[in-house]
Image 1 (spheres, rainbow, N blue to C red):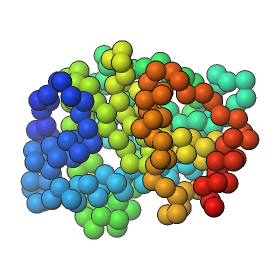
Image 2 (tube, helix red, strand yellow):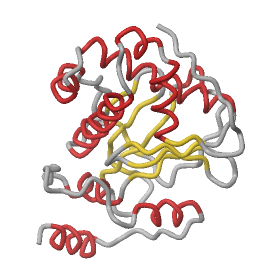
Image 3 (cartoon, helix red, strand yellow):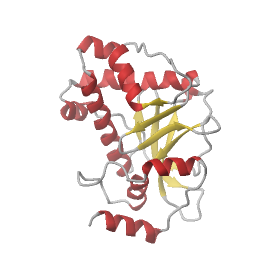
Image 4 (cartoon, rainbow, N blue to C red):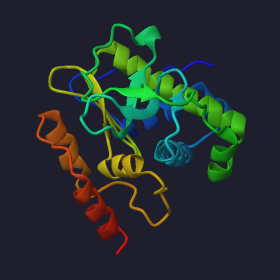
Length: 228
């Protein structure tokens, strides 16, 4: 299995739609199985749903050929809180500059793999095809990261993997997902919005250090208002 995606434009950040389009056009899995772009978009959406629900349930989850989301208790705050983090695989991304995390978590469970049978049911694609497409998506994204090209790739309902102003890479989690993880016992449902409305502002604010931790009272207030 090979991904033929090659970085082409260093001036603009790599976006989700460009990533999906490249895999649809150049990836061997899409070519061999005649998978159209709309199916790859659906797979990307369902992948985000699976990752979101895993993190919400405080389950660490791995992404093949790229990295992993780990969920644990933050040890850097006065009040210990459940928090998710994202990290790239040490190989081959050892040389990639990562933004300094705002908190450190203790891993509480082994990193689980993706459920390709579930993705298959959600996308009407064979599990083996789902596995091959996900691997090529992550491999293509990884090649852009290693090339030094800026990225701004949205994982639906989870957050954005982006290059900040200093050239370091960090993952900005959706604030609603962070609240679900912190409070626990609040699994996502189909009625929940896929992303908070102010997500783009949230990413911009965090990139310049303007976001501030919210109190437990504020978190409960937001969750209560979201159910009205």
